[in-house]
Amino acid sequence: MTDPHGPCQIPAGSRPAVAVVLGTRPGIVKLAPVLRRLADVGVPHFAIHSGQHYSENMDRVFFEDLDLPAPEHRIGQRRPGVRQGEQTAEMLTGIEQVLVRERPRVVLVGGDANTNLAGSLAARKLGLIVGHVEAGLRSRDWRMPEEHNRVMIDHISDVLFASSEHAKTTAEAEGVRGRVVVAGSTIGEALHHCLARGSSSGSAAAGHGSDYALVTLHRQENVDDPAVLRELCTALCALPDKLGLPLRWPLHPRTRTRLAEFGLLDGLAATNGLALGEPAGYAEFTRLLAGAALMITDSGGVQQEACILRVPCVTARPSTEWVETAEVGANWVAGTEADRVIEASVAMAGRKRDWPDPFQVARIPASHRIVQETADLLGGGA
Image (cartoon, rainbow, N blue to C red):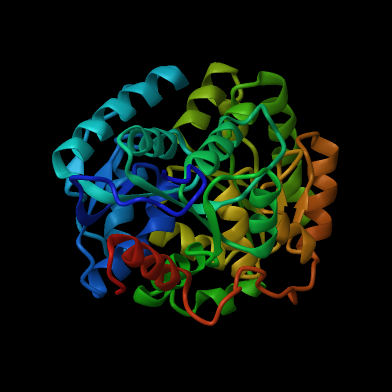
């Protein structure tokens, strides 16, 4: 009798190939090193794009900036304004159809977006082996759709690739069924790859005397709530004077829409020292981040990127899944009240940049460990 809690079973009728499911900016970034490593060592694989992010500056440019070929399968653009459940269901159906045709043995997902929940559910229902890159993260904020997704993905995965010992402990404390492997973070690999290939290759060091702060905000619990968004805008309008620095704010499409809807966009645009812009591609964003004096964000991935580049970070949320960044002093989790965001920003702008990188947990790159483990699941090491 098969042990329901035993090792992964090779699905009958599958072929020794890996499907990599992606479809959002963060997912493309964290899975880019894995895709390059799969290609380098000759592991049969293909990518499925869910269509969750579909504008050029939120999608195609990221493949170009990270030296990735176009995905072999694209299941169609998601329609704007669709509810979370409907979006997830549409992506699940499309991903399942590709998996049925291609019959891969292993499916890798990376992160916590609806794309990853859809991909892991489709694979689980077909009896395929599920690997979750960036497992074990928890913000403990149940308002976040990403938090629901993280928990569900971890509990239906066969192999959980954790970025740190803390993440491994978190997953195991919940009694996950799958095996937890501490692989480290692939985000640092993607970040340094992008910085090294362009004209910004030296900016990570040069930026520490920078003359601007950088802002990103997009979480639905922040930008969809008019009261919260007004608090954050109050802080951002005050900060150029408080910091003695201009702020650069590339606006996520969702954020721009809500600012206009709530009557906040014109006032922000007229604020001295606050420059609003379009979303940046990955190469442009890494250059901006590496050269910033301060990062103010509600993004999980950006918290980690700032920590790795030693750019002080203020997180405009009540909690973070990247607790390691706060523990080493790289990140102040400030909440969303204007006074707290201002206080944290002024303090972190003067922070000495001497913290260690908490995500360098192994002597080999995270992508190498992930691909080795994945190749073993196919029945042969890479």
